[in-house]
Length: 465
Image (cartoon, rainbow, N blue to C red):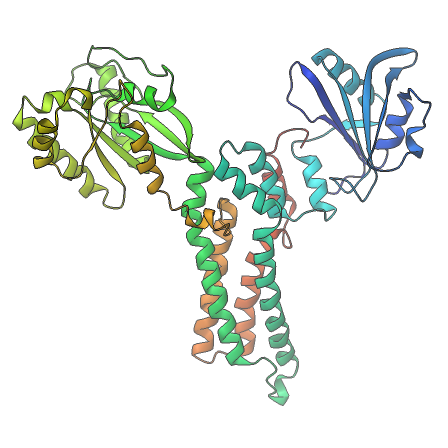
C-alpha cells in the first residue's frame, strides 16, 4: 500500500469554473513543480517556506500555460504528511488538462481514488475512522450529516474507541503476565476492577450500536412513503414539500405509474419522499406494476403517510370505514413504523366536516396539498419521529456500517469475557476473547488493518481527495 512516488489530480470538480485546484503530493512534488513554475518576483519555489503562496506562471519550455497561485506545504505539516503543492489555475477544462498532462510527462502519476487521504492515514495524519469521515463530509447534504461527519473527522468517535481499547489492553497485558507466571499461581489483574471495566465497556459499546439507528437514517436520508388511492393528491403533496413541480399532476386517475423520489432537508435532517402509484384494482399492466412497487416502498420506508381525499369522505360513510380498516391494517403489519393519516383538501372542509371525520378516525392530520395549509405542521411532525437528542447534545453517533459491524463483534467478545469471568474461566481462555475484542476495536481506527480493507474503503472516495 505504501507508495513513494509523486501523484497528481484535480482537487476541484471537473468542468469550467472561475478557478480550479490541482494537487500534487509526494517526495518530488516541490522539485517537479519548481521546474515548471516561474515566479513573478524571481523566487525559487524549492527555497520557500511551508504554508506560503506564490504568484507566477506554469510554463512548458517557453510556452506559458497559465498564470497561477502555487501553495507550498512541506512534510510533515501537510494534509498527506508529504510535500504537497496546490496549483490554483483558471478554471478552463483545457487549462486544467494542459497543466496535469505537463506534470504527468515530468515525473507525476495520476492519483487513485482517495489516494491523498490514504497517504494521510498511512503517514499517521489521521486514523481510519477520521479518513472515512472525510468522504462523509464531502457527501453530506444536510446540517445533521455535516455535523456528524465533522465530529468524527475531529476524532470524537476515535477518541472514545481508543480510550476503551487502551483500558482493555492494560488488563490484557496483566492477564498475559499471569500466564507467564502460571506455575507460581500469581494473579496480577484485579478481577473486580476488570468486571467493572467490562460493564462500562458494554454500556459504551451498546450506546454506540444503538446510535446507528439514528446515524444511518441521518446519513442516508429518512425514506417517507406517500401512499393512498389514485387522485387523492399524493403528487401534489410531494410538489408542496419540494416547492417545485417534481411530480406530474392530473385529474386522470393512475397518472403516477412508478415511484418518484426526491430529498429535502427539514430542520437539518434529510428526508427522502417517495410518491407512489395509487393503490386500486386495475387491469392496466404498467399501472399494476407501479402498485406492486408501492407496497415494496411501504416496507422500505421509515415513515408512511396515508393520504385520503377529505371531500370524498364526506359523501361516502363506507369509504370512511374502509379508511379506518386500511389504517389499522398497515399499522398492525408495521407496529414499530410511524404511520400518519393525512386528510387532504382541508381547505374545502368546515369544522363540522372535520368533526365528522374525526369521529371515525382519531389519529388524523388535516392539510391542503394544493394551498400548502398544514404542510409546515406536517414537516414538524416528521422531525419528531427522529430522535435527534444525541445530535443536539453533540454525542457520538455511528453512521458507518463497517464501524457498526465491528462494534457488534467487539460487544459479542466482551460478553464472552464477562461470562468467562462469571464461571471463573482460566486466564488463557479469557485472553483469547479479550484479544478478539481488541482486534475488532482496532479495525475501526485502523490499528488493525490490511490492504484489502483499505482498498475497499478508499475506492469509494473521489479522485483528488
